[in-house]
Length: 113
Length: 112
Image 1 (tube, helix red, strand yellow):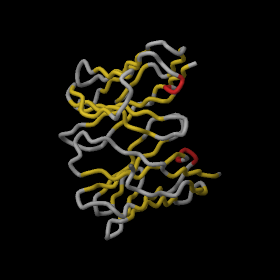
Image 2: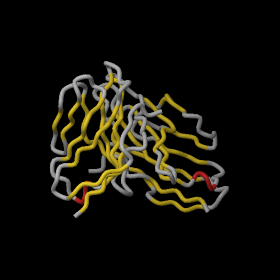
Image 3: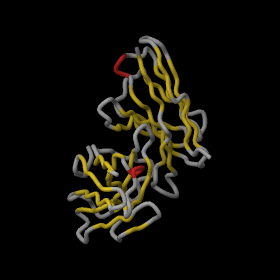
Image 4: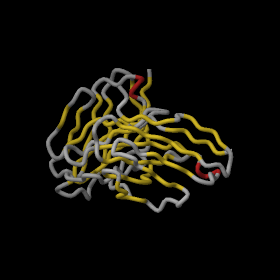
Protein backbone atom coordinates (compact mmCIF):
# COMPACT_ATOMS: atom_id res chain seq x y z
CA UNK A 1 0.00 0.00 0.00
CA UNK A 2 1.29 3.42 -0.92
CA UNK A 3 1.63 5.56 2.20
CA UNK A 4 2.11 8.96 0.53
CA UNK A 5 0.82 9.14 -3.01
CA UNK A 6 1.09 11.96 -5.51
CA UNK A 7 -0.63 12.57 -8.82
CA UNK A 8 0.30 13.09 -11.54
CA UNK A 9 3.75 11.53 -11.60
CA UNK A 10 4.66 13.37 -14.79
CA UNK A 11 3.30 16.66 -16.08
CA UNK A 12 4.40 18.62 -19.14
CA UNK A 13 2.70 21.95 -19.66
CA UNK A 14 3.17 25.30 -21.34
CA UNK A 15 4.23 28.54 -19.75
CA UNK A 16 1.36 30.57 -18.40
CA UNK A 17 -0.86 27.58 -17.65
CA UNK A 18 -2.32 26.75 -14.23
CA UNK A 19 -1.80 23.23 -12.88
CA UNK A 20 -2.34 21.24 -9.71
CA UNK A 21 -0.49 18.37 -8.07
CA UNK A 22 -2.40 16.26 -5.58
CA UNK A 23 -1.10 14.46 -2.51
CA UNK A 24 -2.77 12.00 -0.19
CA UNK A 25 -1.42 10.10 2.80
CA UNK A 26 -3.07 7.09 4.40
CA UNK A 27 -0.86 7.04 7.50
CA UNK A 28 -3.17 9.05 9.72
CA UNK A 29 -0.56 11.79 10.00
CA UNK A 30 -1.49 15.32 10.97
CA UNK A 31 1.33 17.20 9.23
CA UNK A 32 2.07 17.38 5.52
CA UNK A 33 4.77 19.09 3.48
CA UNK A 34 5.70 20.09 -0.04
CA UNK A 35 9.35 20.02 -1.11
CA UNK A 36 10.91 21.13 -4.39
CA UNK A 37 13.97 19.51 -5.97
CA UNK A 38 15.46 21.57 -8.76
CA UNK A 39 17.85 20.63 -11.53
CA UNK A 40 20.80 20.92 -9.15
CA UNK A 41 19.15 18.25 -6.99
CA UNK A 42 18.74 20.42 -3.89
CA UNK A 43 15.70 19.45 -1.82
CA UNK A 44 14.03 22.52 -0.34
CA UNK A 45 10.98 22.86 1.85
CA UNK A 46 8.16 24.94 0.40
CA UNK A 47 5.21 24.54 2.75
CA UNK A 48 4.03 22.62 5.76
CA UNK A 49 0.50 22.15 7.04
CA UNK A 50 -0.71 20.82 10.35
CA UNK A 51 -4.34 19.75 10.60
CA UNK A 52 -5.22 21.80 7.51
CA UNK A 53 -3.49 24.91 8.89
CA UNK A 54 -0.50 26.53 7.16
CA UNK A 55 2.54 26.40 9.42
CA UNK A 56 5.48 27.15 7.15
CA UNK A 57 5.70 29.13 3.90
CA UNK A 58 9.33 29.41 2.83
CA UNK A 59 9.05 32.61 0.76
CA UNK A 60 7.52 30.75 -2.12
CA UNK A 61 6.01 32.98 -4.84
CA UNK A 62 2.31 33.51 -4.32
CA UNK A 63 1.67 31.78 -7.64
CA UNK A 64 2.02 28.64 -5.53
CA UNK A 65 -1.04 28.01 -3.40
CA UNK A 66 -1.29 24.90 -1.25
CA UNK A 67 -4.73 23.70 -0.25
CA UNK A 68 -5.56 21.18 2.44
CA UNK A 69 -9.20 20.05 2.32
CA UNK A 70 -8.54 17.65 5.20
CA UNK A 71 -5.50 16.46 7.09
CA UNK A 72 -4.97 13.52 4.73
CA UNK A 73 -4.65 15.71 1.63
CA UNK A 74 -2.37 18.57 0.63
CA UNK A 75 -2.68 19.77 -2.93
CA UNK A 76 -0.36 22.21 -4.67
CA UNK A 77 -1.83 24.62 -7.19
CA UNK A 78 0.49 26.66 -9.39
CA UNK A 79 -0.73 29.65 -11.38
CA UNK A 80 0.94 31.20 -14.42
CA UNK A 81 3.63 28.56 -14.71
CA UNK A 82 7.16 29.72 -15.55
CA UNK A 83 10.12 27.85 -16.99
CA UNK A 84 11.86 28.01 -13.60
CA UNK A 85 9.04 26.05 -12.01
CA UNK A 86 10.31 22.93 -13.77
CA UNK A 87 11.36 20.60 -10.98
CA UNK A 88 10.40 17.51 -9.04
CA UNK A 89 7.88 18.20 -6.30
CA UNK A 90 7.74 15.86 -3.31
CA UNK A 91 4.94 15.57 -0.82
CA UNK A 92 5.70 14.26 2.67
CA UNK A 93 3.97 13.69 5.99
CA UNK A 94 4.54 12.88 9.65
CA UNK A 95 2.66 12.73 12.90
CA UNK A 96 3.65 15.52 15.21
CA UNK A 97 2.35 13.69 18.21
CA UNK A 98 3.82 10.23 17.96
CA UNK A 99 7.02 10.43 15.96
CA UNK A 100 9.35 12.60 13.98
CA UNK A 101 9.98 10.35 11.02
CA UNK A 102 8.86 12.03 7.84
CA UNK A 103 7.70 9.87 4.92
CA UNK A 104 7.90 11.02 1.32
CA UNK A 105 5.92 10.39 -1.81
CA UNK A 106 7.52 9.33 -5.08
CA UNK A 107 7.55 12.78 -6.59
CA UNK A 108 5.81 14.66 -9.38
CA UNK A 109 7.99 15.64 -12.35
CA UNK A 110 6.86 19.01 -13.67
CA UNK A 111 8.26 20.28 -16.97
CA UNK A 112 7.25 23.73 -18.19
CA UNK A 113 7.90 24.37 -21.88
CA UNK B 1 21.00 25.73 6.24
CA UNK B 2 22.07 22.14 6.80
CA UNK B 3 24.03 21.63 10.02
CA UNK B 4 25.95 18.63 8.74
CA UNK B 5 28.98 18.03 6.54
CA UNK B 6 29.33 14.96 4.36
CA UNK B 7 31.76 13.89 1.63
CA UNK B 8 30.42 14.62 -1.82
CA UNK B 9 30.82 11.10 -3.11
CA UNK B 10 32.05 7.61 -2.21
CA UNK B 11 32.50 4.29 -3.94
CA UNK B 12 31.96 0.87 -2.42
CA UNK B 13 32.46 -2.61 -3.82
CA UNK B 14 29.38 -4.77 -3.96
CA UNK B 15 29.12 -7.06 -0.94
CA UNK B 16 31.44 -4.95 1.18
CA UNK B 17 30.41 -2.68 4.02
CA UNK B 18 29.71 0.94 3.09
CA UNK B 19 30.69 3.40 5.81
CA UNK B 20 29.28 6.89 5.28
CA UNK B 21 30.60 9.58 7.62
CA UNK B 22 28.83 12.71 8.77
CA UNK B 23 30.11 15.64 10.77
CA UNK B 24 27.63 17.52 12.99
CA UNK B 25 29.92 19.36 15.36
CA UNK B 26 27.30 21.94 16.35
CA UNK B 27 24.63 19.42 17.30
CA UNK B 28 22.75 20.30 20.46
CA UNK B 29 21.69 17.96 23.23
CA UNK B 30 18.09 17.64 22.09
CA UNK B 31 18.82 16.91 18.43
CA UNK B 32 18.60 13.54 16.74
CA UNK B 33 20.75 12.39 13.83
CA UNK B 34 18.61 11.16 10.93
CA UNK B 35 19.70 9.38 7.78
CA UNK B 36 17.70 9.34 4.57
CA UNK B 37 18.62 8.23 1.10
CA UNK B 38 17.33 9.08 -2.35
CA UNK B 39 17.62 6.47 -5.05
CA UNK B 40 17.53 7.92 -8.55
CA UNK B 41 14.05 9.07 -9.58
CA UNK B 42 12.50 8.16 -6.22
CA UNK B 43 11.41 10.04 -3.12
CA UNK B 44 13.70 10.29 -0.09
CA UNK B 45 13.58 7.13 2.02
CA UNK B 46 14.00 7.02 5.80
CA UNK B 47 16.86 4.76 6.92
CA UNK B 48 17.55 5.20 10.62
CA UNK B 49 17.92 7.76 13.38
CA UNK B 50 19.54 8.01 16.80
CA UNK B 51 20.24 10.33 19.70
CA UNK B 52 23.40 9.10 21.39
CA UNK B 53 23.34 5.32 21.43
CA UNK B 54 24.25 3.21 18.46
CA UNK B 55 21.24 1.97 16.53
CA UNK B 56 20.64 -0.93 14.17
CA UNK B 57 17.70 -1.90 12.03
CA UNK B 58 17.12 -4.11 9.02
CA UNK B 59 18.61 -1.54 6.68
CA UNK B 60 21.67 -0.18 8.44
CA UNK B 61 23.59 0.61 11.60
CA UNK B 62 24.24 4.06 12.99
CA UNK B 63 27.33 4.71 15.07
CA UNK B 64 27.39 8.02 16.95
CA UNK B 65 30.59 9.19 18.64
CA UNK B 66 30.54 9.76 22.37
CA UNK B 67 30.77 13.53 21.95
CA UNK B 68 27.98 13.31 19.34
CA UNK B 69 29.88 15.52 16.93
CA UNK B 70 30.01 12.92 14.21
CA UNK B 71 28.36 9.70 13.13
CA UNK B 72 28.74 6.90 10.60
CA UNK B 73 26.05 5.10 8.71
CA UNK B 74 27.00 1.51 7.94
CA UNK B 75 25.42 -0.57 5.22
CA UNK B 76 26.85 -3.98 6.14
CA UNK B 77 26.69 -5.66 2.74
CA UNK B 78 26.19 -3.07 0.03
CA UNK B 79 24.32 -4.08 -3.11
CA UNK B 80 23.94 -2.31 -6.43
CA UNK B 81 20.49 -1.18 -5.29
CA UNK B 82 22.09 0.80 -2.47
CA UNK B 83 23.50 3.24 -5.02
CA UNK B 84 21.90 6.53 -3.97
CA UNK B 85 22.46 9.93 -2.39
CA UNK B 86 22.61 9.60 1.41
CA UNK B 87 21.60 12.53 3.60
CA UNK B 88 22.61 13.03 7.21
CA UNK B 89 20.24 15.45 8.97
CA UNK B 90 20.03 16.75 12.53
CA UNK B 91 16.58 17.47 13.90
CA UNK B 92 15.20 18.47 17.30
CA UNK B 93 13.91 15.69 19.51
CA UNK B 94 10.40 17.13 19.74
CA UNK B 95 10.41 18.67 16.31
CA UNK B 96 6.73 18.12 15.71
CA UNK B 97 6.04 19.69 12.36
CA UNK B 98 9.53 21.07 11.75
CA UNK B 99 10.58 19.99 8.26
CA UNK B 100 13.77 18.15 7.43
CA UNK B 101 16.52 20.42 6.12
CA UNK B 102 18.53 18.59 3.44
CA UNK B 103 22.15 19.31 2.60
CA UNK B 104 23.98 18.05 -0.45
CA UNK B 105 24.43 14.52 0.86
CA UNK B 106 26.91 11.84 -0.20
CA UNK B 107 26.52 10.14 -3.53
CA UNK B 108 27.31 6.47 -2.89
CA UNK B 109 28.14 4.35 -5.91
CA UNK B 110 28.17 0.60 -5.33
CA UNK B 111 30.36 -1.06 -7.92
CA UNK B 112 30.08 -4.65 -9.11
